[in-house]
Length: 297
Image 1 (cartoon, rainbow, N blue to C red):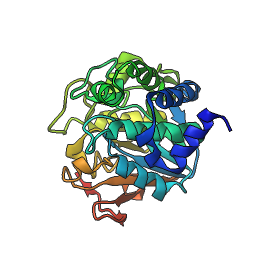
Image 2 (cartoon, one colour):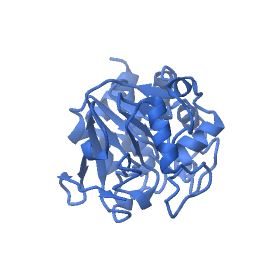
Image 3 (tube, helix red, strand yellow):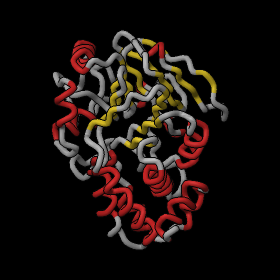
């Protein structure tokens, strides 16, 4: 086993090891994960029968560890972006993203890491973007930030199972499946729509992307032959199903657990899904995973 392989295995086997990694170790991780992401298209497709979706983590390293440990048995774990910024603990963003990148290196098919708007700051600035400053404080220099940006730019933007479409924020209105397959990872218009958009009924629509309504969502799902859209990004819709039970918003970090319908959520779905009611949602707010009642609008 090489030293580089040893670093990855140490973090995968004991996530808390990220706390003692030197800048050179982090650079090694970024160097190894970049070609893994480069092999993926903007749209990742899977026909797996058991898929778990994870919402915004925002540096919540403790929840990242809990989720991976408790749902590792799933065929795939789909993370919907926003791994960094707003962390509840010091260095939480660095620990969270490093841990997930190590998992991606070791299990490239099992762990799918989509980019969120905070990983797209290089193209569409977001606020607060604290990650570069955190790297400077942790390592004494922010030079490694450029390497992280390379990795972020190579991340895919969307995920599709036979019946579910997933992205951080929104949809590509009017697109069909082939359009999704040929979309470039850093197309600015696609980024705005996929990582920044909110539904039109969101009271905090932030304006960087083009908001989508019920008619536009159902048309999009019909065009790509999917039934449900799973997203994150929008704490006001946390734990809520909208647009005829076809759009579910989840967040998986503790700092937003009192927003929306409340909860620290993951969504587990099997291949045949016709609406959100067919999806098993679990909540960790009590410190144990419990079945969650999704609110409907």
